[in-house]
Image (tube, rainbow, N blue to C red; front, side, top):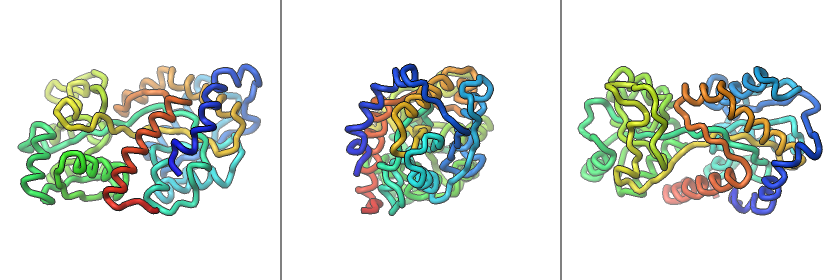
Length: 333
C-alpha cells in the first residue's frame, strides 16, 4: 500500500483540524514525551531530534520534558516498529527521514505506513554531485557522457546499498542512460574521504558531509538536485559558496529535485488534537533563531511542511523512488 493511498482519507481531516484543535481542546502531553530517533547517536537524524529538544527547552514551548531514545537498527526500522507497538500513544514522536515510507518497499518490514501518523517535516537535505578538484568534468552532463563512453568504469561512491545515495545514482542512470560503478561505504563521512583521496570519481553527498573537503580545495561540486539554487552565504572555497552552485536542471539534467526530508511521526491511532499540538509545536521550533542557526550550520534548507503540503511532498518523493526500485529490481514485493 502506498503512502498516498493510506493518507487519502485521514490526512486531509488532520490538516483541517491542525489550525483549530489546540485552541478548542487545550490538548497537551500529560507525561514526558519520548523522541524516538530512527538512527544511532551522533547521526544526522539524532542531531535533528536533539536540536528540537534543545529549542523546546530553551524557549519553554512545552511543559513536559523530553527523553531521547535511539532506535536505529534496520536502517531505522526499529523506531518505526516501536511506533507500531505503541499505537495510540501520543507521547512518542518518531524522528526519521524518507526511510519512514521507503523502507517497506525494499525489505520485508515488521511495520507498514498504516502504523504511522505524519506530523511535520522541518528541513530538507540537499544532494549534490561532487568530484575531485582536478577531475576533467566541469558539469554533470560532461561526467554523464564519460560514463556512457566507458560503461561501468567510473566509480560513484555512496552511503549504503539500496539507500538514498544509490537510489539517486540509479535515478541519474535511468534518466540519462549513463552507466556508473556504484561503490557503497558505511556513511557520508567515509564517502567524502574516499572521494578526496581519489578512490572514487564522484559522490552525491549532502553539503555538510563534504564541506570540509571543499574548504580544503580537494573536491568541488558540479550541481545540486533542487528546484532552486541553495541560499547564498559566505564563500566556502575560491570565492564560491552554496548559492553559486547551479542546479542540475540548469545544466540540462532532467531531474528537477531530489531532497531528503527530516520528518516527524506519531503512532497510528492517536487523537487528531495531539497531531495538531505537535505540528504547532514544531512550527514554533522552526521559527526560532536557534533553528535557523542549525539549518545554516548543516547547510540544509529550512522548509516546514505539515498537512497537505507534507502529504504532497511525500507522495511525489515516494513515487520517484519506487520507480527506481522497480527498475533496479529492488522491491520487496
